[in-house]
Image (cartoon, rainbow, N blue to C red; front, side):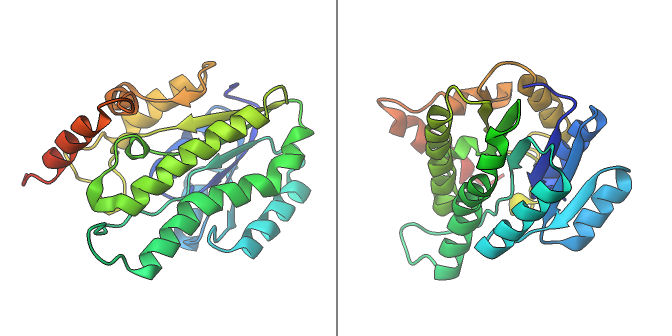
Length: 249
């Protein structure tokens, strides 16, 4: 996709990968609007990036999504890029009882949120000369982390939805992309200081570079092996991966 001259809306843009993408795209000459539930994070991000805008959004609430979409279309008629980035990740136990609050909040935020947000903006995007919907999934959608089974499942579902969306929008002005990050040093599972995770800055730099190509998927080099795992015998690597992740560090 073209990396400048866009009007871009990013969910979950006040921290982590969302903020990293927002700042990188802002510097490239795009009008960037970020959203989230934590007003303090939004204000800190926009203050550090003059010209960037923000709006409060609860992606778990369909009414909030509808209201924000309506406001965006009215305030930013040139809006042509949506980055569905907002997500939550919690530890669960698929072999035991999974708490209802964890289940519903994760599925609603990570899967229903992007679908609802896309649905609310898609007719507007179809009217643009060039537009893009970018879904941020995870390599855990291809190689699940068993200790976070619900999160991994939502990312697998988001990948599937992205494929369907890309097919149904084929021939239109709307391009559909997927960013599948590896483990990155962010607030998710308090991974900011995790040595096994990829530092945020190099991830963003590499992701932006791939985003500027014609590729439908943004997969950094560190994520390629996990992205390519699905297929016959995939369970062998899934076991090896989870055995490794459960070993004491």
